[in-house]
Image 1 (cartoon, rainbow, N blue to C red):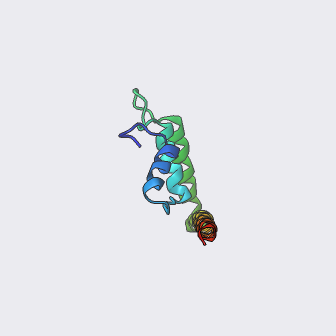
Image 2: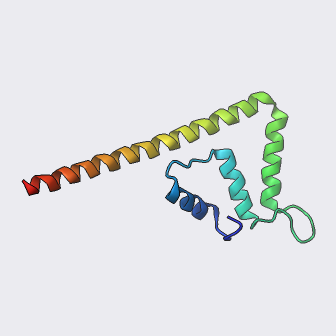
Image 3: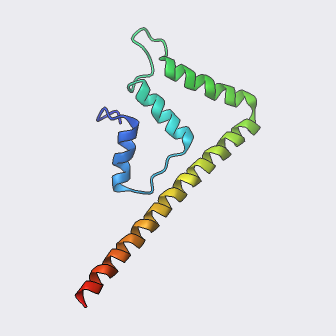
Length: 112
């Protein structure tokens, strides 16, 4: 992302061109979005943290303060989100294969 000054959404799309199955969990996705929001530098020239990074840090600190139960809950939610995303992509792949197979059968019918 940083090397090419590429926003998160574009970087994810580029990565998926070479590996369709890529599916970052929601926590990592959030970190990358903050990194993008901060334009690859977490601090202002004055040395203070940028607002979006401060917000993300305070959210993480609050999660840790709430204890292991909250962390486990957030992790489970993230895993469920990732599983749903993986399932959607898998269905898309199956649909594409089915469609391609049907198209091939149609073209074979025309040859006979």
